[in-house]
Image 1: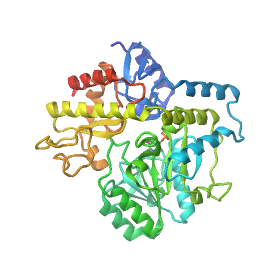
Image 2: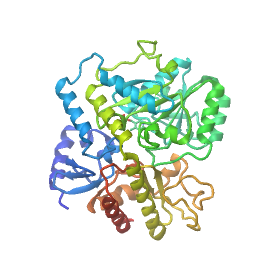
Image 3: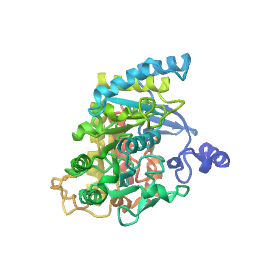
Amino acid sequence: MNHDRSRELYDRALSVLAGGVNSSVRATRPYPFFVERGDGAHVVDADGNRYVDYAMGYGPLLYGHDPPESVQSAVQRYASQGPMYGAPTEVEVEHAEFVARHVPSVEMLRFVNSGTEATVSAVRLARGYTGRDKVVVMRGGYHGAQESTLVEARGDSTDTHPSSPGIPESFADHTIAVPFNDAEAVTEVFAEHGDDIAAVLTEPILGNTAIVRPVDGFHETLRDLCDEYGSLLVFDEVITGFRVGGLQCAQGKFGVTPDLTTFGKIIGGGFPVGAVGGRAEIVEQFTPSGDVFQSGTFSGHPVTMAAGHEYLTYAAENDVYDHVNRLGEKLRSGITDIVEEQAPEYTVVGTDSMFKTVFTREAPETFEDHCEAGCEQRESCPRYDHCPKTGADVGAADTERWERVFWQEMKERGVFLTANQFEAQFVSYAHTDEDVEKTLEAYKETL
Ligand SMILES: *Cc1c(COP(=O)(O)O)cnc(C)c1O
């Protein structure tokens, strides 16, 4: 494969864009390929190379690069008519009605412009509603580029520090970081600080530190503790929303009812978006009905609302989730078979249309009765003691191999995976059985 033109563009980009990119994960080694255009489940780069795309914009693109005709025509219509006004439009109401109808815990929403903005607003709302300052997050969870959740913990759950320069220590003073799946640690934290905790903020599945599913009972413990101490349970479904569990999202799949939910990615149909949804009594506390300040020039942008609404409407009326989940399972079970032969220490993770291979370091003694299509945290699986349950477990994997060797070799075979061990991968409605078979061939040669 020739990459001359991408190399040249990256060289130019490095002079005028920080690190040559506008979002850090895109700066792949030795240099990223620049995309010329999308085509179904594929992207074509600036040198004319074609890849099967499993990055899918890092989550939003449920239909790949050719969305249904209804989405395309709505986008064109709304873009040419406005595109935005600073006054309300009908399509915002329609989109909110759709989400409230399908997501069990959501009665009312506020749309914003990114997942980050959604989690920032949700944390402010939870603090405003409860009159408390502390939030509990999961180590290895990701809630975007926000000051309150960019923390790292050193040992004790309350010994948190900002994970980036530029964030005052005092932000981290209000954030408690526990290991995902550690019910005991959360219970202890509540015993000590329960009356000061505004919210527990968690992804239902760690979706940005590989894909780590909850162990049995973990979410139920969070729900019970929040009820007992009057704290809010906030599910960050920016990545799982309308991806895991279909239209009812991951909370429906797991049967847990959060007080607030943050959305992003798919809910904007490929355009910048975020949303906070939940019980009306809480969401109404946002200005102007309440006192918790929230505002945005582009919030509820008509083009985004139209794209998001047509995206979800199409999924409600067609076999979208059946298709993406079937191919997701085919990939996970196919990779599991390859791993069993070639790299028994690796763990295949994922659910629905998400998948990843974690380069864990210890093999199970047997493959008999193991999770066949991605780790389900099933205690009877022979891999149970070795499969990742926390962010730290994923961090302890052979992460360098992914970034420096594996990703590049897959790319040279025409498969575009996410650039490091931590970001999830996605199947879209545009992927075909043939794409999956070609991908499994590349895994077989590369793993
Ligand atoms: C992507 C993501 C975010 C951040 O969303 P942006 O739109 O990138 O700001 C927050 N939370 C989760 C779970 C995400 O996956």
